[in-house]
Length: 182
Image 1: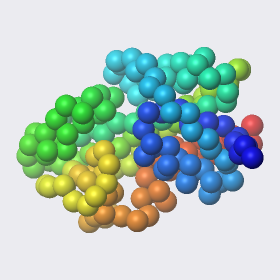
Image 2 (image 1 turned 180 degrees about the vertical axis):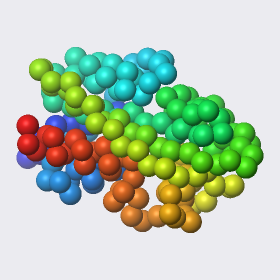
Image 3 (image 1 turned 180 degrees about the horizontal axis):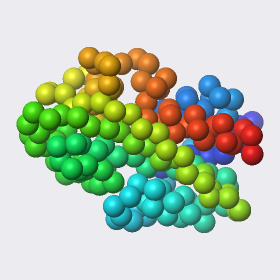
Image 4 (image 1 turned 90 degrees about the vertical axis):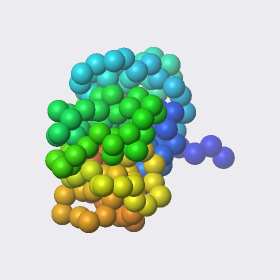
């Protein structure tokens, strides 16, 4: 029996899909997964990257989709890696980020969720302030072992409840409110 989905998450990243599926399930939205490498344009804004990825995903699959693009913005590095977070993680990883930082470790995570169907292209953002730890802590993916949300002493990778307040949760909550009322 084929499962029925409200829409599909398009990404090459299983971790992002699993988080999005769990979060959206809490809002009553059934999310399917279309694993795909999407063209990722180089841009100084997450929003432009997300819009282009969403259009590309919809043209590929012809189904209502969402994509997510996110970035880690570090104050002392003037917002770097920002929209280049994926590339930076692949090239220098968390160890490279930790080696770049001195005393000012303030940072924020930003998530952009973009929905696309045959007539609508709409984006939703979520932001979460925090700091970069002095060493990697916990077993997580991406920047989770080095990002400590504001008012916490633990990294995302050390938490069990990350999906209840993360930057991705905030963006998906905005999306859900819009989607369920459109």
